[in-house]
Image 1: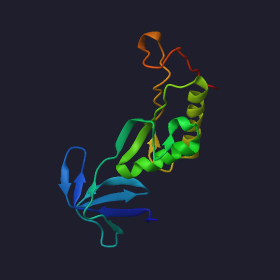
Image 2: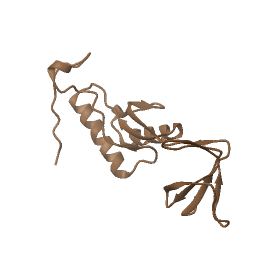
Image 3: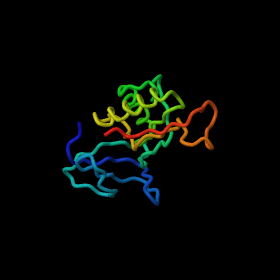
Amino acid sequence: MHPKLYYIKTDRFLLEDEERQGGFLKVDHEVFGGFTNEVPTSATIVDWTGYTIAPGLFDTHIHGVNGYDIMDGTAEAVDEISKAILPFGVTRFLPTTLTASDENIVKAIHAITEAVDKGLFGAKSEGIFLEGPYFTEKYKLGKQINPVVLKREK
């Protein structure tokens, strides 16, 4: 575990509007505090020389990975997916359902909600991508037969 304040050293940073060679990324209480060329002499430095530091990716459509699927309908599957995609640079994602029975889609929605409420240990969920069911007769695809309207439980 790192201290509350430390600096990551590497030789390449991809920033919002530029690329920088060498320097340090300040991390204060798990929040990125900006790029700097110099650090205090007493600073804790984590050396990632040889790596590139870039903003995290947002995967807007993911069904599963490593044998886990959103449609498994378990909080464990959602959390395992969130952990598996993080090493690939994905820091945010939309768990995506498939066209399935109402019961299975609602089960998946409850599992996503449960996993998010417990706290995901990898990439964070930014919502749910309801790929199925379709919402209107006009826009149905493939196996989608009956339109469904989902109502949020109170």
